[in-house]
Amino acid sequence: MREPTRSARRVHRGRVHGNGAEHYCSPARTWTCSAIVVRDPSTAPCSGHYAVAGPAILFDPHLLPLVWRARRALRLVMAQREDSRREQLLEYALACFPTSQPQA
Image 1 (tube, rainbow, N blue to C red):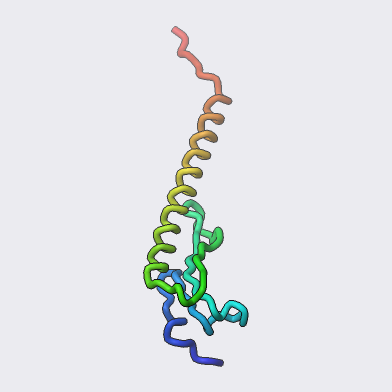
Image 2 (tube, rainbow, N blue to C red):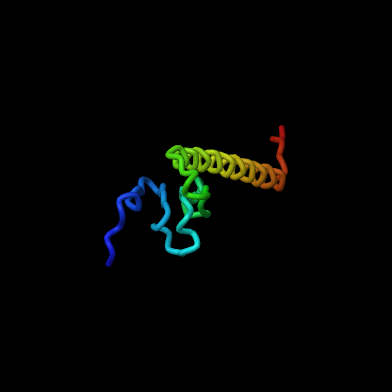
């Protein structure tokens, strides 16, 4: 098994940065990529990933923090949608039960 290159080891808490020859696909070896896993905040399974890629000559070390911040924004939107969905479900369930007034 091939020893990973120094920059291929740049994996921290789901964040990955790959550059040039580290790409598996030979046409992508002139590119750089920063990516991160996006998990559903309410259920925790992997919902997908967010990646920024481009020509390796345009590499910027700030891409990985940018990807991390974008994931935070995506998770916030996902959490807000889940809260809204749960609120609608609760309102629907409460509407199904008639309110009873105590009889005197």
